[in-house]
Length: 181
Image 1: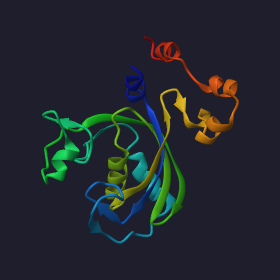
Image 2: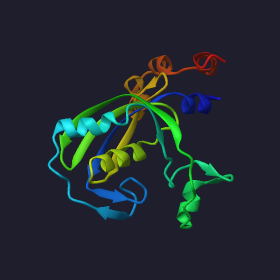
Image 3: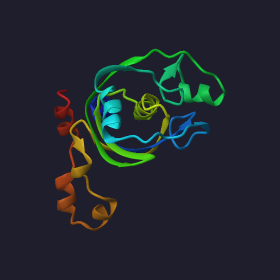
Image 4: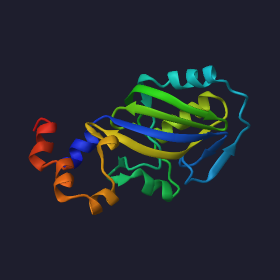
């Protein structure tokens, strides 16, 4: 299954978060639940917070997630106002980069294991810095061997010669070989 291949591989993301504002969903879609002043942080303090969440560590899945409890996605239970006890799960950050600091915003990228919640990562970094944070934007740039750098745009698909498009496509047998099936 192609979906299994995409979901079972490591992922890479690029994102932006905002310090000083915590939401109930850990992203900009949620309701603001706390606002705190952002202290005058330097790059070393920020890097130290990121370092705390590098390598193997346990992460608590957010209530607003597709993870299931009794066959029901947590986000459905959260919409009903329920909070379910969740088990922390072992995740891994292989590498991260801090791409831009313009307080209260920080741009970053992270290469992580499957099952990793970037919203929770940002939330935890904000807590470590003492002011909270929420995810403002996120883009998956890589999933396993599939990299956005090798992707083509919809406009390219519409205008490129058929042969050029076919050069970018993978057949199902090729995808199966990629996952060792």
